[in-house]
Image 1 (tube, rainbow over the protein chains, first blue to last red):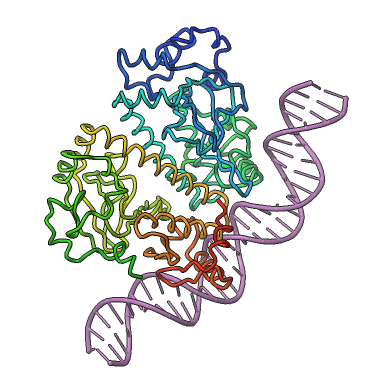
Image 2 (image 1 turned 45 degrees about the vertical axis):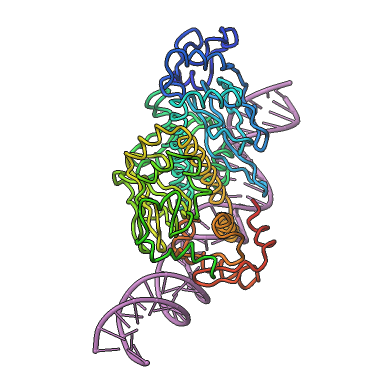
Length: 251
Length: 251
DNA sequence: CGAGTCATTGACTAGTGTCAATGAGTGTGG
DNA sequence: CCACACTCATTGACACTAGTCAATGACTCG
């Protein structure tokens, strides 16, 4: 799947690129692919250069923590490639997955003192790394950026409410349909419309996102496959019957 | 329950009070009870007066809509007394309740073009009503207010994530324990610590908040009552065994 | 090639949902 | 003031979805 290369496999030459011009103007030798929809797209002129000076481009291998729940928050991140799992380990041993951050997503929106949840890479990930203190001060000098982050937080809140509605009263089939279609929608901005949806997360991650068990996720995938709605593989699903999937999701 | 009068029964003489000084300084002839923790508490001097000019104090009887999901958003509200249910009717006929707004809460945080959900009063409610356009312009002139609303939105996002964790993997007993303790915590800022928690919402509302049915809510209340954890009445519960309730909630 | 991880499948169980009847509380009109 | 209708909550019987436990299969990595 060539259009997903960008998402899943950042350029290995990344490390060689001049770090002073990676984040908001130039990346991998060309224009930054995510700037159009990223948090920094409201900045102009000198402010962009200033943000660039602060940005430290960073490369994470798969299954690496960007930050841990409860730890003091020193950093905020802007994801430029790859997929990050946002989750929290609860006191009863269960893990709740809140979502999967994609390129263009900003981690650390509320600028909290301590991270409320953990962020771990599922794929190779490249991200612009900012010192939280520097970023906070920069934000208070730049009301347009503050306004932008406010809107992004509002969007995240709306997404969380969608998530609540999915968890609140749906059966396993409907939950899974919502999950696939939600992922599909969010991938549009980076890779365009897809019929094959990559699943870089494990069945356990999907189960923890939907409030199900891994067995139920597996069985439900199998059933949707048998019924000709999806073609399920370990790391991707192909949408065979979009109308029926949409009927199941029925938001 | 005298300390709950403020929450549930606003002063009937409310309408008679000089409307020019109701919202942020003076209410019911005395200092505004919610200003300390409300969105406007970051404003000083002239800005407070300006906000007051914009605020239209409004009185809503029980079971009245403040706004409907999907409707164009003309207003934002700051709740000064009473309880408001935030919910959304889904396409399958189910109703998802996202939460219950209490005095000091601000409705319309993202300043969206259209309301994403409905807001209906459960009790008598008094609220400062603002024209959305005026408020938006005022906010862009007042970075401290923008910053404050940003923080409030981040707090709402954290609450939504709590809600997700509650819905994600708990049984009915744990969900109900979380609900009661969550309500208790949020009531602290207005009425102080309580052992008797008022329940102005119906069993159906609780069920729709927790992703359960009304029957399961009822049965679970009955069991917690039999086991000596709660004393359940139609419109309130008394916490008899707080430690056991906290064990059940086990966040 | 073997160990290890992750996903699938099956058998059984437990917790909720569904359907239906009863009970309690509230408001209205005679 | 009481009777009635109406709404909401409780309780019971039963069904069914999803969870639990266990075994097998598929894939990856050294």
